[in-house]
Length: 269
Image (cartoon, rainbow, N blue to C red; front, side, top):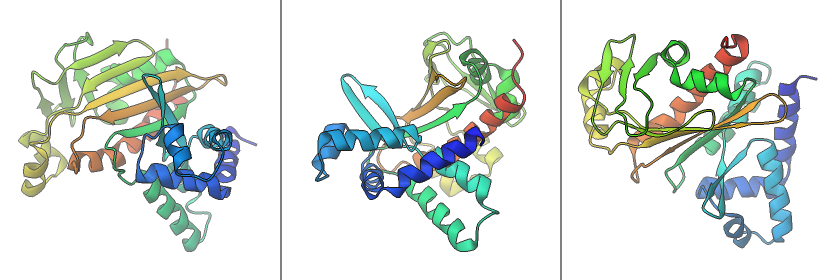
């Protein structure tokens, strides 16, 4: 049995339990909750809730982050995306719709605006870091590259659409740079040139251009079976942000193409 099939089995087992589905519902309603907060919503012992969360985390349906001493739990739609993409042609329309409904539920915007998404890539932290930072590789899976020296505080210039669109701004900078572990930078401006290049109409451009810059954070963590756990945390959105809604569809596509690149064409040393 393949690694992917084993992961599918974990996802199905995790979703089979009504208590675990209830936990996903709670996180869908309000993402980023602590164990204490989740326990308060359930008629269940703390130890039982903790075990259910461990199963969901093992299946990659829940991803966790630390905020000081608090461990926050976030929904992660990656396993459902993978199942839908892989099996969509093998199931009847009704079952396909069930997957689509679940995928939509897991990706729905919660009352907390941080976007958190985790995937596992069979690669090394060094190769993944190069894929995230070197223009030769970001162009392959993302269609853009960043011009910067990657020092904290340095300006970033975004070159998109085969270099036809250049996005600059003094507040568009590198926030964190910890090689092979953590990278963060402010998201780019929505300029008129960018809006035209990607097909935004005037109404959408005028709606999203005033939104403040957000921040994209990449966390890399090697795991035991030759994979790297990659988590993107996109934060800093205002309530009702339109860009927040847009990136929740964009990041899964970027990560899928990144994963395909690294697992089919490993970056040479």
